[in-house]
Length: 576
Image 1: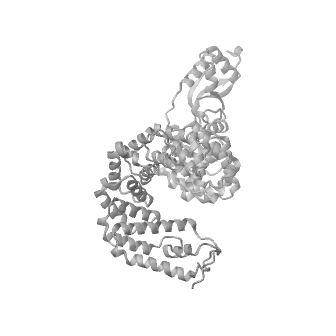
Image 2: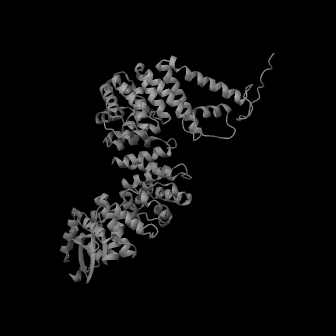
Image 3: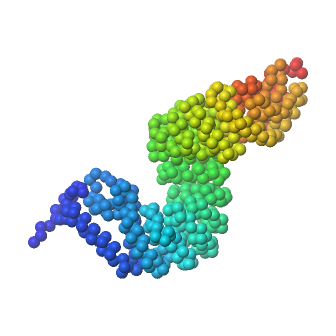
């Protein structure tokens, strides 16, 4: 009689026995199961084959996510050796074999089989290719288009997600799936689970394929729901990210999602990437929501640390607040402190770095330590910046007034010249301001004459726009007897709203409307700070500001307005 197994749990190890079986016994048994599965594919129907492939793909994905660890279960070690190769990538030979086997009976596939097959290979991020130059996803798409009407909500969602995930934006397939959703939208869109809805629109945005009617139908459906309580944080994030990325303007949808997030007691259920994508989406879609941004910022600033936020997430977050022109000093300080203390600046890619520094400079936050700490990393990445990134980096350091000779050297200038024809109008303007900073304020490297002339010409080419505030200020200056010149172009290339002479001194007057400040605060924007500094230091003209909130308090009382200007300029009444 066989002795019963002990109930005592034995610590797992690749060298330990599993019950009565050794590690090698278990390995051989699992190998036999796999071999029998492979050898039996010829007898499998399509449903059985796709279910087998999907099961193996799910196991492979889990094993990759878990990685290796000491003392792990022996069965996991064996499965990893069978399904993965040394670099933790899927066993391509095995999955290629299954792809070939599926091709032999692909015409037997129903909608669920095709969907599962694509989904399985997307899970392991593998696109099997064949000798004729085609790949498995090409063939799945052709078969799927023929039976699109038979796809249900889960099939459509999984299929679209799979193609977007592996980077196969098959236009005909996506058009067919989108059309199918639009056709059944009125009666059957409610069959889509929240995750299926979010995955579907995410897939279209990720694939870069447009289907306006699909996005319109989904937005209307989501907005018509009584509540979004069934939508998990990731689904909410994916939806707004998809609409922002696709450029699908649906303000009611964004309002609905914002209100759902605001109603949450806490945001702990939202992953850092989800929070980042949400504020990025609202800023990109030009749908800033003050209460949403305040809640997200307070949540992030309240963290003990930001170790779970990767560089891209941090960059996207501050970029969103800068783009939406929403100030939150605690958030920006928290992120800056984390970055400076983390000492892992090399993890920032060129775009994340450029966007982050641009954001701080745009918000008028010139954290010298933050900008200085990035100099070595920024210098290493010069060859990797896009045109926009190069211009943003230059402008950000100029606005922050942080000297960086190891960054802004001959190599940087050569790179600007090399990319010259690819710069947009705004980039040339930024580089002109940087050139002023380098040559007039710092006496450092300069752009070649022909390039700097191009920057200057573009900088001064913008047609001035005169606001009602400016018109009113100028009218009152004339009323108190000051000879006033409007929209004066000075040597640096800046235009000043008005220039007067008071007691023999030239004074520039700026009628500063809301666009010159951060949100509804009284803090000047980075652009405003830079202009004030450069006009003063380069042109030698003192600038005084007439902020809109001061002027608005005076109403229509011209006497008070004139008294305000006299006081601001030190212009006494007996001088008239």
